[in-house]
Length: 96
Image 1 (cartoon, one colour):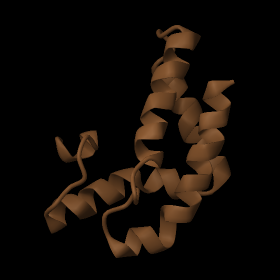
Image 2 (tube, rainbow, N blue to C red):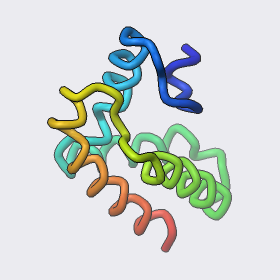
Image 3 (cartoon, helix red, strand yellow):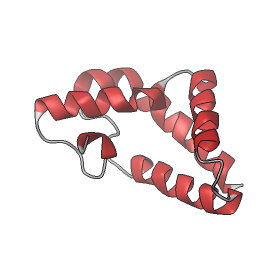
Image 4 (cartoon, one colour):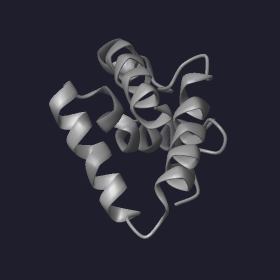
């Protein structure tokens, strides 16, 4: 559970794989990622729009500011570029 909080990059192989699997949604096709983002907003519908947007941008930036989003080479090769594109688009969405 602590690994999926994504507060620090994992260091052991099992945790790296678990974290990457948990983050795979970030690198999915735009339509699927956008649906995920909509679902996150629905999950936090009790939060004011301004507060939610600020918090969501903070989370997105925490991933964008990493040297790499994914810990294993397999996930980096397959999802890193699309995850960065999705996160950039999401940041624009929630910052506006």
